[in-house]
Image (cartoon, rainbow, N blue to C red; front, side):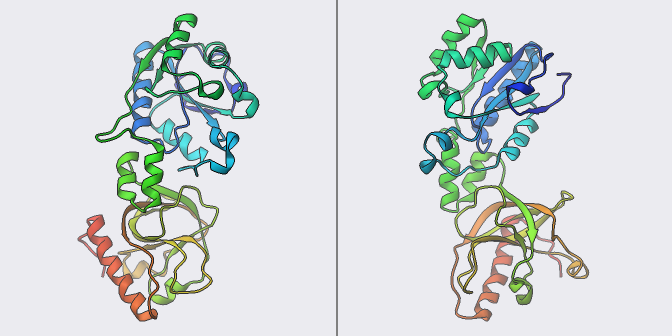
Length: 323
């Protein structure tokens, strides 16, 4: 593929001149540290063998097809997932549309049609708990046996963290209780959501704490309701320290659940010129400061918001504060 990094949307987009590959497969939701170990192992092995590194993933998530009523909410959207994977250095990501018909392939049928016939795989890099094929009946032993049949090597990469295996479930559990610090440890980066800044009720501005309000259709799994210290990354890539609210502010009635980020420490002369409306921004969560509380009046709320800003300074390591 001449070193190009590409997003292949289905088997039909695989180039005819692809050449032999090293492949891995998985859902990779969150692209956490365990995933990163597998992906880095893939890139290293492919480079050493002179092969094209290829990641196979699926859309939608298989659970959304087999048991949609119980499917977990995804940590990140597909485009973000592909971007994270490509950022690790793989040559291409093959996204296979996941359907009930596709899921009926036996492990051998899947490997033969995708790994062998479509990708000319010479090396497969996988984690210990790999599952594939109809009813997830294929495992590591199955893959090794098929490697012997079809002539590809199998390399296993550990996906374990210090205390427990890194997993998307672990990330979701942490986010559900607002523990974004643990989520960041498992992910190897701050968890984020991304969306367009839209007009809100302007209550924050009236209170002296103007916020960037993200559109309801923003991407990324929201952590538990509460107030967080974190960063807002604007369309130019500039990172701004922020106090972030997730939820419906219980001090006011009729407020729907949303994400609002109050950028702190802007120079006084830049406050009125700071306009993010219409921009797509990324909001990163560093640490939860507190839960949502209904305050007895606006003065008490303002006092708490000032305290939140001071605490965010400490969390984010900001000592040079704007006046």
